[in-house]
Structures are given as C-alpha cells and as structure tokens.
Image (cartoon, rainbow, N blue to C red; front, side, top):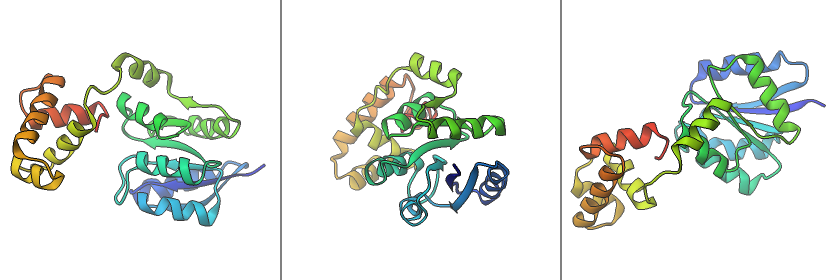
Length: 202
C-alpha cells in the first residue's frame, strides 16, 4: 500500500525539503503541498490524501483550525501536526481538533516516517516527553472570551480597540484582561498574552 500525503507549511524551503524527504520512502507519495491553512480543505478534496501533515502557524487558517475542519469534512483523512512549537497547550488543542499525531520538526526523519505509518495503522502518535508535559500543565484556565481578548491584546490594540473588535464594552474588556492577568500570574496584558501563547492556550 502506498500512503498518500499532503503537506501544509507556510515556509517553502521546509515544505520542499519535507516533500523530498518523504518521497524517498518506498511506501509514501506526496500528492500535494500547500502554503496556507485555508488551502488545506480544497487540496484534500482534490487529492484525497491518506495523511495530512499540518504546521500550526500558517496564514489564512492555523493548523489546529484546519484539523478541526478536516475532522468534520474529511473524517477518513488522518491529521498529524508537524510543528516547531512543542507546547503542551498546543498538543491538547490538537487532540481536541481531531489530530492523531503530533511531531516536532526537530525530530529525526525516521521518527516522522514511523509516525505516519503508525497513524495509518490506527495508532495515535505523540512525543512521550510532550505528552507528560501536557498532563503536568493541565487545561487552560482561560475562558473562551478571555482567550479572545488576549489574542487581540497581543496585537498591541488598546482597550477601546479590543472592545470595538469584539463588540464588548471597555469595562468588560478590562474585567477579562484582569482575570487573564491573574490566571497567568503576570503583571500586565502584554505578559499575559505572551505566557498564554507560550503555553499554547491561544
């Protein structure tokens, strides 16, 4: 059986190198490669891959959102997150989005090939150290709205701008920011957004 692969990564050099690397495997064929998250679903419909390797941070749509869309629209397609960001919060969100594998880009090439074969066989594949860190970190303490406010805050937006973008009052935005700052044990919204981002909560 030849495993059909689709790659999604916004860095062309990495995308090209991965395609070349995976095509060296006798039982793999790379059927498509895209550079934007919002191109993934159409590419899956067109090329019918068995496994999609998704980066997390891409323009148009992030990999975690794309994984969730594929879970609903292409349930037979297996998703492996392949990312630079080996963060506990990202792993939890990836599993919730329907991904069956999570591999960091600095893993050996053999580990990636092995992960692809194992997910095709019906297994879940996660780096053991990252799985342990995820269990230790626990779930995000932020509510959905606090996460929304921090995502906008990390762009440098003022309270008034955050309120305008999210259709909230300025007082409500301040309350959400205060709660997020307390939950992240930081001093201000910039630090809160950074910590939440580093932990994969945003």
